Amino acid sequence: MNKKFHSRSDVDSRVTGRLAVCDSFATQHRPGLSVWRGALTALGSASVMFIAAGYGCASGGSTFGQGGAGGGSTGTTTTGSGGEDPTTTTGSDTTTTGMETTTTGMETTTTGMETTTTGMGGTDPSGTGGAGGMGGTGTGGTGTATCPKPAGGICHEFIANDNANNRINYINEFTSTNPGGVVWKVGVGDTGANSPRTIEIVDNPKAKNGKAVLVSLNKGYAEFDLTDGTFLARVSNFSNVTGACRVPGGNTALGINPIIRIVTPAGATVSQFNLPVGDNLRAINRNPADGSYWLSLTESIFQVSSSGQQLWKGNMGTGTKGYAVWWHAGGGAWATDGEPAEVLELNQAGSVIAKIGGRTKFPDLDFFSGFQRTTTGTFIVANWLGHVSSPASNRPHVVELTPDNKMIWSWGNQTLARQITNVYVFK
Image 1 (cartoon, rainbow, N blue to C red):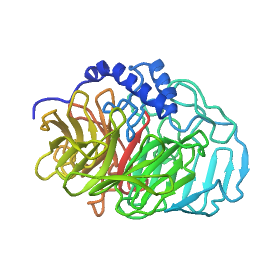
Image 2: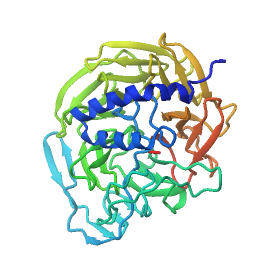
Image 3: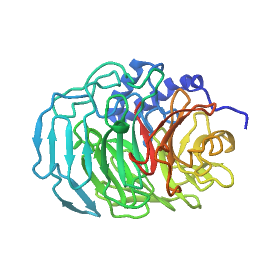
Image 4: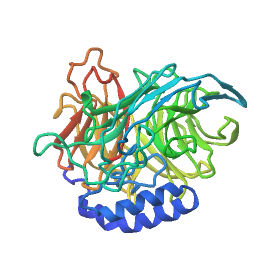
């Protein structure tokens, strides 16, 4: 396989057009995105990374450089009195159980949902000002991202789903001094390998800064405050859910092989459609430009319309087991292939034209699952270790690979996490 992955220049040439798509989508459905887009444009492509497959407005994608939960604060003290409406929804029945939360300055501990939050530091590395202080009074910092690692080191800010511990981890290597740069972590309130899988950032008025982390769970999905991991909402009246995408109007698409089901915030089914025949559905990703869904079924990957019509198909080859798929500007896609531990590039004809990673070259790799592509052409990939019974203590959970197949960054050990199945990278 001689052809290399598309270079940064290939991506930069398409950014302007994709930003227009994001603007149009944000204006209609996700107003917060247009704010992020303006900040990204101001910073310029030299210092900002977006996901190349969706350029920052994909429902399951990421906006590189937007910053995460905001900057620091001077700190206030709040003693919880039963929590902020932690609602669990099963069908149309709603039960509220208190989640007493104590906030002291920038440290939050929540009982009942296994949430631990520690401060993010005093500046917002996005360079655009934070979205709000963690302690309740700050407005976020300004400035550019500075990685505290030795010269030449690489830092990232990201969310990582651990489906062995059934937990979300928020990591900020720019500002956090905690082991691994962990800012907060929260148990998702559901069990099994499907809890959690997919990740996206959505609007939620209950969130402190208006943004929530939406993750798919075996029984449905849940939302947590991006600022500190506080539980916000849940739908839990299904089973075998492997992916979730917010759709225009506030409903959510759930991947439940052999269908995608659209549900309301109360868990009621609005509609559903059949998927192509196949096994091992994992992540579903929605392209907001046309409303189509991208997914894998073992070695086959698909683009389907919002009514389930097959629009495109690719094949990753015998022995592969797909996890995440992102559309490719100009046709084709990028996808992870499971146990070969590779990221593949497929052309418009559905054929593999390039690959990076591989267990032979990188013995620490085992199974590639969720991933994102940056505008520099690198790939940040979850190295899922669920098939390894006793991994070495320092075996990484997330890696970054270049188009010429060099590993330039990694994160994690067996103390910080056990099985990272997906990532959402801010910068």
